[in-house]
Amino acid sequence: MRSEVPDFSGSRANLEVCILKYLAQEEKFENYKLYLCSPVDLLESYIQTHVKTYCLDQNRRLVMFLNTTLTQYYETIQKAVFASTAVVKGRRDSNKIISLWLDEFCRELGGVLRLPRGDLVGIEHLEITDIEFLNDAMMKALSPLRNRLKEEFACANLSSFEKQPHRILLEQFPGCKEQCPFCGSVCTNTIPNHDGDHQLVFHRPQALAGWKFYKTDILVIDICSSCVASDMSFRLGDDLRFPYKKYRDAGPPFNTWKILPDSSMQKYWKWFVCHFRAQLEKFFKGKFYDIGKIPTSWHTVTKQEALDELR
Image 1: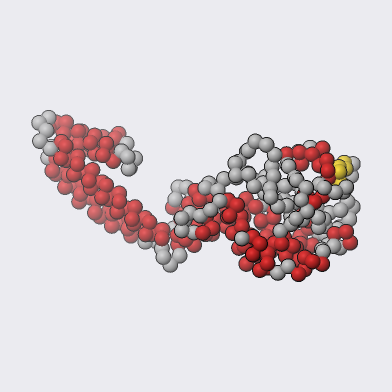
Image 2 (image 1 turned 90 degrees about the horizontal axis):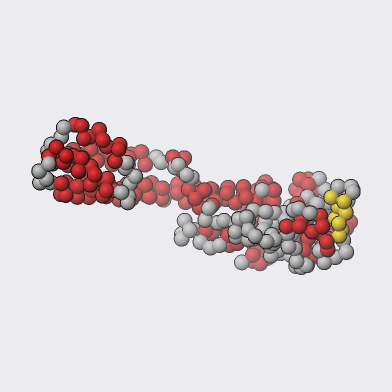
């Protein structure tokens, strides 16, 4: 999938862009709510959906993969049977020939299949002395087993995997999961539990994390990266007030973030706030008015402009 699906062929930052495009194309606020409140869960859901589509669509890639793998194992076991027979054939110590054959068989398969030698000890007590008989019996047992597995694979789904494929793919995109305490954007460091401060390139309106001006229902339209360059302040409860310029004084999690002064904001979030204004106001129980009024220029941003800027 990493080589064939564009969304997964690049970095985690590229995947993040793909997710934002997907959300905009779907235009479902419920999906956006999950992204804003729990971006890690949205990421996993996004990958899981794509894995299911890729594996179980009309191309039936999962069935093709299982059958190809089955053929490879079948041929490997065949070769191991023939090779084991060739090695021990003609040995004079016939009382140990089965034991020697099993030793060789497990050795041949050692790099491909996990087959503990101890699991085969019962065969040694069957009093088989004709190695050709054992060879033929093994080959006759393989074919119907392969056919039965093929029948099972025809209706296979992802639930049968011990480790879910989407979880394996998710692990290919490691990164920090911490969200900015002001706007909720996720730290862009690609190393989980990294050293140093959390940071990111673009912050977004603090309203998208539910921030309101003190003792009002006015949602904060400003972005935190512009606030830290201003004389504004924020409150934690009724008693604690901190200038944005000294946001680190508020302690954790604020003091674990490096927020550089920057007034620029992506068009994407300008479009999003305007397009989903009513839903945002209802969800966060606030309003965009007065000092939290949405700038007029934001209303002119089209979805296509927002998407184009993400490229």
